[in-house]
Image (tube, rainbow, N blue to C red):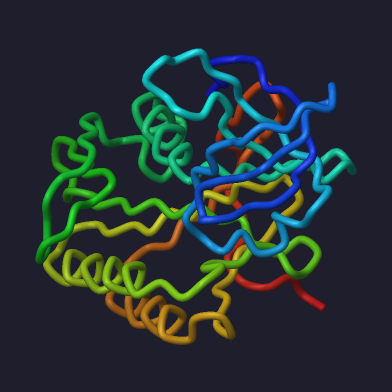
Length: 237
């Protein structure tokens, strides 16, 4: 997926009120950017961090920049826009680019299911059980090569796992898809020290038949594309 407009580099001054970030452009101007990420952004929001912003000229938008990437300045990037994973996954599903879900011909988004819940994607295909797919954006990394979820306590995430478990027990396919918006990780695991209840819910959902699919991403200042699957669990050693 290409960014709609060309990104511009900046340095982070501070992130505040969850959705706002003060930034300095290369020409020295200070601007306020929208931060489309309600999470803690642990390890990604230090003062002076090199970031990439997407400008816009939409008169309906109060802020003229959106924070899209963290540049680790070692050849690796992290995508911070939590709305992007669903767009990228939908495009990949419709193009048949996710091998484990390639046989499904119909893709519907935001379908009501379970109790007061919406599934990110409901897939259907001739002769196949419906597949309920929940997408989670992963940006936390505290150990080399390891991405972790969540980066803060998420009761909502545990609720999603319970709903997926219900679908699996009813005979459907239920898939939790972790999209790792980092280019420096090979493995994915639960951050059980941050949210032990979520880690326990993931274990229970797995026992109930929920599948876990971890996918990497290719990220540059030009765009974000889904890449190869990543391993579930911590790296050996």
